[in-house]
Length: 440
Ligand SMILES: *[C@@H]1O[C@H](CO)[C@@H](O)[C@H](O)[C@H]1NC(C)=O
Ligand SMILES: *[C@@H]1O[C@H](CO)[C@@H](O)[C@H](O)[C@H]1NC(C)=O
Ligand SMILES: *[C@@H]1O[C@H](CO)[C@@H](O)[C@H](O)[C@H]1NC(C)=O
Ligand SMILES: *[C@@H]1O[C@H](CO)[C@@H](O)[C@H](O)[C@H]1NC(C)=O
Ligand SMILES: *[C@@H]1O[C@H](CO)[C@@H](O)[C@H](O)[C@H]1NC(C)=O
Ligand SMILES: *[C@@H]1O[C@H](CO)[C@@H](O)[C@H](O)[C@H]1NC(C)=O
Ligand SMILES: *[C@@H]1O[C@H](CO)[C@@H](O)[C@H](O)[C@H]1NC(C)=O
Ligand SMILES: *[C@@H]1O[C@H](CO)[C@@H](O)[C@H](O)[C@H]1NC(C)=O
Ligand SMILES: *[C@@H]1O[C@H](CO)[C@@H](O)[C@H](O)[C@H]1NC(C)=O
Ligand SMILES: *[C@@H]1O[C@H](CO)[C@@H](O)[C@H](O)[C@H]1NC(C)=O
Ligand SMILES: *[C@@H]1O[C@H](CO)[C@@H](O)[C@H](O)[C@H]1NC(C)=O
Ligand SMILES: *[C@@H]1O[C@H](CO)[C@@H](O)[C@H](O)[C@H]1NC(C)=O
Image 1 (spheres, rainbow, N blue to C red):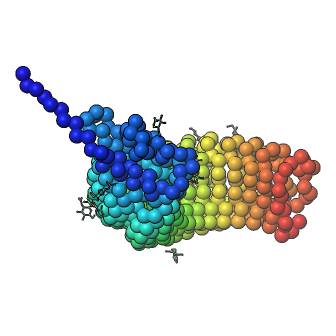
Image 2 (cartoon, rainbow, N blue to C red):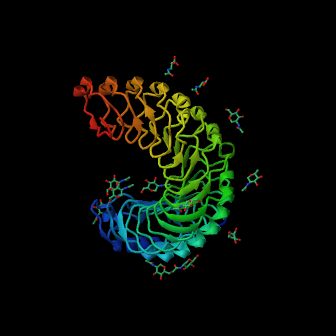
Image 3 (tube, rainbow, N blue to C red):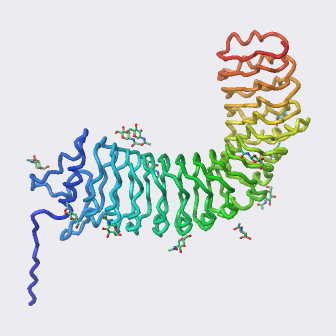
């Protein structure tokens, strides 16, 4: 008979326990007392039972697998000894007030799959050593004060699915190596200081669903290869220095698109009529570019459309049929924002606007060349909170029905040629009225 002798080597303190105590040591404030159980003087409570700590189940080798100290109001810094928790798979320190740098030792956590450090006050650069976290799937470091470049090394973490770096001060170019991340679904650099071009290699990300590059200083064109990623649900590149056309066939190559937002760049060319094939499109935001031509009259196919933001372009040509596309929008029953201000739309307001959805919240036609009278049927749009018609060439009188729109808070009619008096119905309304006329 074999006799097995199980030798339990009882170190005074395991390396995990020492690492946890070092982590605690760098926390200066713990208002909710989550670390009060982390106490080496109390041997009756194994460190695996300390709050926020989850260990592997194996009774012989109990090692820390998860550390979750999120939303605890913790103040302090991240101890470099965190790199000693060599079995750690998930680290969640998000939504605290941690400052200082992300320690290079994080790169020793080769089993780490999830790293959540968002909403702290972390400074310095993203450590290059993060390349050691070769099993990382989910990286969320949004809302910190990180500076410097996005390390190329991120592109060598083959399992990455989510990269969330929004609301930092990252600068330099987007690394081309990110095109290697064949499982990436979510990439957000929203609100940083990134510059240079969007790398062509991002077109290789064939599983990408969301690309958010809003509010940076990116220039050049959006690489055509990006418009070939049929999995894309959201492209948001507003507030950059991009130029180029919107591809005419976008509606055929990106069938899953829900959100297309390129506002406040310098896109030129026309609004492709293939947009009408994007049956899942909810947000079409093209404001603040240099787009010309007419608006396609088939956008009524977009049954999910909620936001149509075409303001501040050069759309329309002062012609009578410029607003014909509005007829088709009566089929967009989820439309909330319809904004076409500051363009060159001519023509009269079609009576069909009476048949737009009552879900409409904001209707903004201001700063165009629209003439004729305001259709009385506008009183059907019961959901309206803002109606902007200022800076046009409207004539006639104010339809009394507008005064009955219970939700209307702002009515902008100034700089038109409207005549007559303010309808009596307006005494019931809570409308802030802007009326100054060129000729009253
Ligand atoms: C963590 O590991 C490093 C390198 O092995 C060692 O120098 C350090 O003392 C360890 N820290 C703790 C708290 O055990
Ligand atoms: C030690 O931990 C146990 C279990 O949480 C607790 O009941 C006890 O009060 C602790 N003792 C000290 C000295 O902290
Ligand atoms: C963030 O933490 C604060 C407490 O510091 C808490 O009130 C808030 O709900 C947390 N937010 C999230 C999104 O968890
Ligand atoms: C950086 O990560 C490597 C593993 O990739 C590790 O060997 C090294 O100790 C780390 N550097 C520091 C300063 O921890
Ligand atoms: C990143 O963390 C924040 C919490 O601070 C959370 O609200 C957000 O959903 C996370 N983002 C991703 C992509 O997981
Ligand atoms: C970020 O933290 C602040 C203050 O700690 C809190 O008020 C805010 O809700 C948090 N935001 C998110 C997205 O977690
Ligand atoms: C990653 O991308 C870079 C630049 O695009 C390339 O040079 C490199 O060979 C790629 N590495 C791997 C491991 O795919
Ligand atoms: C997009 O895909 C089509 C068909 O697969 C291919 O012919 C075209 O070259 C691709 N365009 C780019 C810019 O990758
Ligand atoms: C926008 O593009 C047009 C046409 O290419 C060009 O004339 C203009 O200078 C650009 N504007 C800016 C602000 O870059
Ligand atoms: C685009 O939509 C139209 C009308 O719904 C349809 O006839 C056409 O087949 C669609 N084209 C593609 C390429 O999906
Ligand atoms: C609205 O959609 C229906 C079918 O869904 C279509 O027959 C009709 O022509 C559309 N109306 C407009 C104004 O586009
Ligand atoms: C509004 O829709 C109704 C029913 O579909 C239709 O009879 C009417 O002609 C439309 N009104 C306008 C002004 O288009």
